[in-house]
Length: 215
Length: 215
Image 1: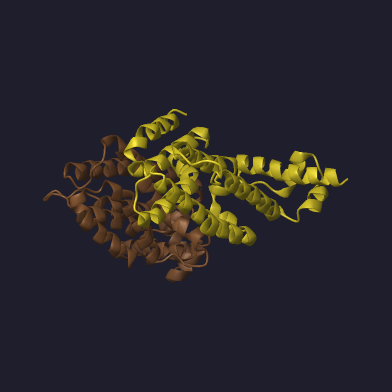
Image 2: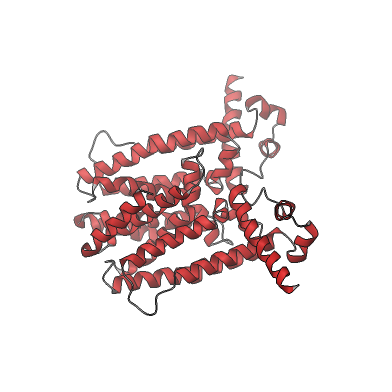
């Protein structure tokens, strides 16, 4: 019994994520989710009191995904591939959980718990992780920049990642957001970093840029 | 009679802009606007068929403001002050017309004429203006960058300007958007440009940065 209960719980979260990404969170109700899963609304309410609780669980998946993938490797030095992989991770997270970024201020206004914990995650944890990575890449000689510039550059990177899909939506209103949009976003973030890449790593960095120009 | 009619028309546009900026466009109805102006709803409908027509007129003001202020001076060469003034203009426009950027995708979804003309303005006119300014600043030796990098850097600048207030809203959910937010935004855009500023202009550029750090 416990096993089935957990399975249904996870299925609700996973299917909600899919439905939210495809149709936007606002147009999907708990009844849609239950119907899609072939369960009764009562069964869904057994696991979640409302849609906001499901959205909050999805946020926890998002946070776990990012925290795990952006961790600093303990067993080896970082290199330029890590730098690009971190950016890929950021955009993969944006893509997998894209409904969260269609209208983030609106979503948070309807979900105070999400607002509080998202804010805490981004502005405390994420800021420290990003700035720590910068300091490490500078120490390793991959990036050349003044420590005082780290904060402004990190904020710009975070802003471009966070709003890229919204930007694409207004830039190409008749095209669906797809993985090519993600590649264009990585290209924009690589452009933010390019002036700081050490000359000896620039060829390798350019290769990565080209890879993202041809999705 | 014609004079009064024009005056009422302009007053409706101006007061709507103020109300939208203060309360968001979604929560303001044409009845609120009429009540605020002390006119009857019928009088308002004599000038505008619906709220979308008012929003569209405000967009035309926004477009006129930007086009006029971003024009290249015909009687003199541009200098580093122009570069910073252009950024100030961008943020002043964002501040004056800030309701448009609280939820731009939502606003456009409800207003097809706005969506079409905003898109045309930004992705044809504005892109050409911004890229033209870059080429001029490079020609004058103020900026040092490869021509192939202009597009990506222009897009990043546009994205940071466009989403800065939305970013601040999620970063500081309990603080109202104010002019200090605008100064922080200019600082972010200056950080995007800083690695490309020619060494001889860097001191002047840094002064401008400091000015925006202390609003």
